[in-house]
Image (cartoon, helix red, strand yellow):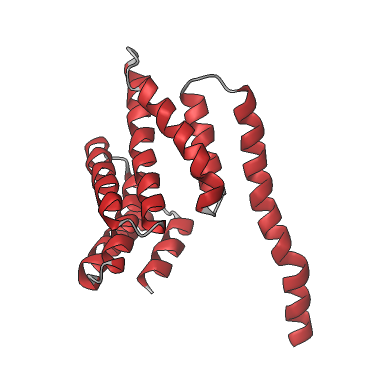
Length: 175
Protein backbone atom coordinates (compact mmCIF):
# COMPACT_ATOMS: atom_id res chain seq x y z
CA UNK A 1 0.00 0.00 0.00
CA UNK A 2 2.80 2.40 0.88
CA UNK A 3 4.49 1.64 -2.42
CA UNK A 4 1.36 2.60 -4.38
CA UNK A 5 1.14 5.87 -2.47
CA UNK A 6 4.82 6.59 -3.06
CA UNK A 7 4.46 5.82 -6.77
CA UNK A 8 1.48 8.16 -6.95
CA UNK A 9 3.50 10.96 -5.38
CA UNK A 10 6.50 10.33 -7.62
CA UNK A 11 4.54 10.38 -10.86
CA UNK A 12 1.46 12.54 -10.40
CA UNK A 13 2.40 15.24 -7.93
CA UNK A 14 5.14 16.70 -10.16
CA UNK A 15 2.68 16.82 -13.07
CA UNK A 16 0.34 18.94 -10.94
CA UNK A 17 3.06 21.54 -10.39
CA UNK A 18 4.15 21.41 -14.02
CA UNK A 19 0.57 21.99 -15.20
CA UNK A 20 0.28 24.98 -12.85
CA UNK A 21 3.51 26.34 -14.31
CA UNK A 22 2.32 25.63 -17.88
CA UNK A 23 -0.73 27.82 -17.25
CA UNK A 24 1.51 30.65 -16.10
CA UNK A 25 3.76 30.19 -19.15
CA UNK A 26 0.70 30.40 -21.41
CA UNK A 27 -0.28 33.73 -19.85
CA UNK A 28 3.31 35.00 -19.96
CA UNK A 29 3.37 34.23 -23.69
CA UNK A 30 0.11 36.17 -24.13
CA UNK A 31 1.60 39.09 -22.24
CA UNK A 32 4.29 39.54 -24.90
CA UNK A 33 1.75 40.59 -27.53
CA UNK A 34 -0.82 42.33 -25.32
CA UNK A 35 -1.43 46.05 -25.69
CA UNK A 36 -1.55 48.51 -22.82
CA UNK A 37 -5.20 47.81 -22.06
CA UNK A 38 -7.57 45.97 -19.74
CA UNK A 39 -6.77 42.70 -21.53
CA UNK A 40 -3.18 43.06 -20.33
CA UNK A 41 -4.44 43.70 -16.79
CA UNK A 42 -6.42 40.46 -16.94
CA UNK A 43 -3.38 38.55 -18.21
CA UNK A 44 -1.17 39.98 -15.45
CA UNK A 45 -3.82 39.07 -12.86
CA UNK A 46 -3.86 35.50 -14.19
CA UNK A 47 -0.06 35.25 -14.08
CA UNK A 48 0.02 36.45 -10.48
CA UNK A 49 -2.78 34.03 -9.63
CA UNK A 50 -0.95 31.06 -11.18
CA UNK A 51 2.47 31.69 -9.65
CA UNK A 52 2.42 30.56 -6.02
CA UNK A 53 5.75 31.99 -4.82
CA UNK A 54 5.77 35.73 -4.16
CA UNK A 55 9.26 36.19 -5.60
CA UNK A 56 8.01 34.69 -8.88
CA UNK A 57 5.10 37.12 -9.31
CA UNK A 58 6.39 40.25 -7.56
CA UNK A 59 7.80 41.84 -10.74
CA UNK A 60 4.53 41.20 -12.60
CA UNK A 61 2.69 42.97 -9.79
CA UNK A 62 4.73 46.13 -10.38
CA UNK A 63 3.71 46.14 -14.05
CA UNK A 64 0.13 45.37 -12.96
CA UNK A 65 0.06 48.36 -10.61
CA UNK A 66 1.64 50.76 -13.09
CA UNK A 67 -0.77 49.82 -15.87
CA UNK A 68 -3.84 49.92 -13.64
CA UNK A 69 -2.84 53.40 -12.40
CA UNK A 70 -2.33 54.55 -16.00
CA UNK A 71 -5.76 53.25 -17.06
CA UNK A 72 -7.46 54.95 -14.09
CA UNK A 73 -7.16 58.16 -16.15
CA UNK A 74 -9.08 56.73 -19.10
CA UNK A 75 -12.09 58.75 -20.28
CA UNK A 76 -13.86 55.43 -20.95
CA UNK A 77 -15.96 54.51 -17.88
CA UNK A 78 -15.70 50.74 -18.46
CA UNK A 79 -11.92 50.89 -18.71
CA UNK A 80 -11.75 53.10 -15.62
CA UNK A 81 -13.96 50.69 -13.62
CA UNK A 82 -11.83 47.72 -14.67
CA UNK A 83 -8.65 49.61 -13.78
CA UNK A 84 -10.06 50.44 -10.32
CA UNK A 85 -10.76 46.78 -9.64
CA UNK A 86 -7.28 45.76 -10.76
CA UNK A 87 -5.66 48.58 -8.80
CA UNK A 88 -7.44 47.35 -5.65
CA UNK A 89 -6.14 43.83 -6.35
CA UNK A 90 -2.65 45.26 -6.89
CA UNK A 91 -2.83 46.91 -3.45
CA UNK A 92 -3.91 43.62 -1.90
CA UNK A 93 -0.98 41.88 -3.63
CA UNK A 94 1.34 44.54 -2.23
CA UNK A 95 -0.08 43.76 1.20
CA UNK A 96 0.85 40.09 0.68
CA UNK A 97 4.39 41.10 -0.27
CA UNK A 98 4.69 43.32 2.80
CA UNK A 99 3.32 40.53 5.02
CA UNK A 100 5.93 38.19 3.58
CA UNK A 101 8.61 40.72 4.56
CA UNK A 102 7.09 41.04 8.07
CA UNK A 103 6.40 44.72 7.38
CA UNK A 104 3.04 44.73 9.14
CA UNK A 105 2.62 48.50 9.19
CA UNK A 106 2.92 48.81 5.42
CA UNK A 107 0.81 45.67 4.91
CA UNK A 108 -1.98 47.17 7.05
CA UNK A 109 -2.07 50.34 4.95
CA UNK A 110 -2.06 48.46 1.65
CA UNK A 111 -4.68 45.90 2.65
CA UNK A 112 -6.90 48.57 4.26
CA UNK A 113 -6.75 50.70 1.09
CA UNK A 114 -7.52 47.62 -0.98
CA UNK A 115 -10.48 46.72 1.23
CA UNK A 116 -11.93 50.23 1.03
CA UNK A 117 -11.77 50.24 -2.76
CA UNK A 118 -13.04 46.66 -3.11
CA UNK A 119 -15.99 47.40 -0.79
CA UNK A 120 -16.82 50.50 -2.83
CA UNK A 121 -16.68 48.41 -6.02
CA UNK A 122 -18.47 45.47 -4.34
CA UNK A 123 -15.95 43.08 -5.92
CA UNK A 124 -16.64 39.88 -3.98
CA UNK A 125 -13.70 37.73 -5.11
CA UNK A 126 -11.22 40.50 -4.34
CA UNK A 127 -12.87 41.21 -0.99
CA UNK A 128 -12.54 37.57 0.02
CA UNK A 129 -8.82 37.65 -0.72
CA UNK A 130 -8.29 40.97 1.08
CA UNK A 131 -10.24 39.73 4.12
CA UNK A 132 -7.99 36.68 4.15
CA UNK A 133 -4.87 38.88 4.00
CA UNK A 134 -6.18 41.05 6.83
CA UNK A 135 -6.78 37.89 8.85
CA UNK A 136 -3.19 36.82 8.15
CA UNK A 137 -1.93 40.21 9.32
CA UNK A 138 -3.98 40.17 12.50
CA UNK A 139 -2.91 36.60 13.21
CA UNK A 140 0.74 37.60 12.76
CA UNK A 141 0.17 40.38 15.30
CA UNK A 142 -1.36 37.92 17.77
CA UNK A 143 -4.97 39.13 17.53
CA UNK A 144 -6.41 35.68 16.83
CA UNK A 145 -10.01 36.65 17.64
CA UNK A 146 -10.07 39.51 15.15
CA UNK A 147 -8.16 37.37 12.61
CA UNK A 148 -10.87 34.71 12.80
CA UNK A 149 -13.52 37.38 12.12
CA UNK A 150 -11.77 38.30 8.87
CA UNK A 151 -11.20 34.66 7.91
CA UNK A 152 -14.90 34.01 8.51
CA UNK A 153 -15.86 36.96 6.28
CA UNK A 154 -13.53 35.64 3.60
CA UNK A 155 -14.96 32.14 3.86
CA UNK A 156 -18.56 33.39 3.61
CA UNK A 157 -17.78 35.21 0.35
CA UNK A 158 -15.85 32.25 -1.06
CA UNK A 159 -18.75 29.92 -0.29
CA UNK A 160 -21.14 32.37 -1.92
CA UNK A 161 -19.07 32.36 -5.11
CA UNK A 162 -18.15 28.64 -4.91
CA UNK A 163 -14.44 29.56 -4.88
CA UNK A 164 -13.02 26.22 -3.74
CA UNK A 165 -9.38 27.29 -4.05
CA UNK A 166 -10.12 30.38 -1.96
CA UNK A 167 -11.95 28.28 0.64
CA UNK A 168 -8.98 25.95 0.85
CA UNK A 169 -6.64 28.88 1.38
CA UNK A 170 -8.88 30.38 4.05
CA UNK A 171 -9.34 27.07 5.88
CA UNK A 172 -5.55 26.69 5.83
CA UNK A 173 -5.16 30.18 7.29
CA UNK A 174 -7.74 29.48 9.97
CA UNK A 175 -5.88 26.35 11.05
